[in-house]
Image (cartoon, rainbow, N blue to C red; front, side):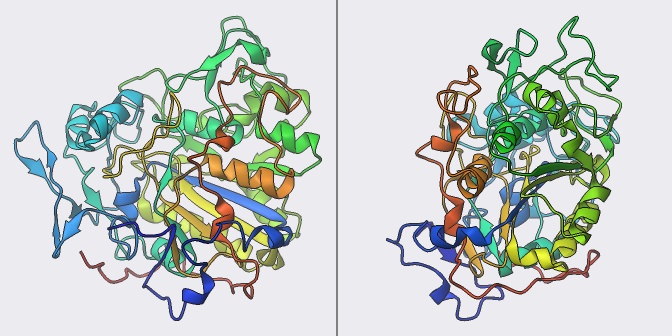
Length: 472
């Protein structure tokens, strides 16, 4: 699909929407910045391991799977079987995906040809039933060319049709889950040579923050210190007296470290710094006495019910509801729908901006080559949804974005534009750049219209009936 303006209208469920969007030459922030004070709560819901083309490759108005006259025009080489594989509808609820470390990202992208996905999946270690690591795939038969549509994820398509879908959202770095979650809360992924020393850290998107030999124990924790010594966004939030929480669905996490071909799934708990829950390992979070802000998911439901949701919330799943293979797609959709229904049924809906995304591509096919902003990213394209009473109506945002944009938006809304910048944030570290300042990064303010009447909530059945097939 061709990109024509920074923001296009979706045709599903959109009637007389055009007045909600600025002309193509308008400043993306011109209609949003003046009313941003209406947003008192920002919620980031991060799911796992799905590419944009897999979930929204046929969404009207989006730059989706390449096709013409009802036929797919792309066919990815199949080294093991010969020939090539075209995109196909995959109704399977339990997927395998492909290996998704930094070397796999490089091979999938293949210098911009975007043709390595099937070959990488076939090279992935097999036999990892019920567990996945960056070099592992759960499917003996590669399913990375499969796509979903309203038959499989009707609620996600309903949110995209009613609110805003971002079709150029890229994971912040070209690697697996762990570094994505570090970027989500700190705009960097690194390994530090000295305990608690932010100047001892160097960029690392393969095995960041591994336990240091002799690092000792985190107080109240049975795990050796993770030593995330660089500065996190919660440090700035704490400094500016902005409330935050990081809600964790306890349970098993499927990704593993150290490039193991197989691994036993680890337990995910709130107090233990780990792949999807890194904040307890950040030096500044511990020094500021903020580790208790990392809480179980039941606290989210309780906080919403009590009207006490913090200004900034991050919500991460466990393996069963993450959509990370082998987690069921339907289980993840039901979980996200329940989270959204909880907010939408509360008075907090009127003052909340919700961002839903998936942390990395999981080895699934995507045809758009990611832009290069520095030595670590961006990574591949993932789905992004903006859900809010002030989200523009039924639009597809074509801006170049990454999860860095969430940090930038939080900083703009609650911190007066303060950045995680060693020169200005009061806690210098050795990060090589300030990601929020990248000239290639779009502005999420463009996805809001604070002049429109607040949008009503969209309450959906967590276990919906399948929708209609999308047109190729």
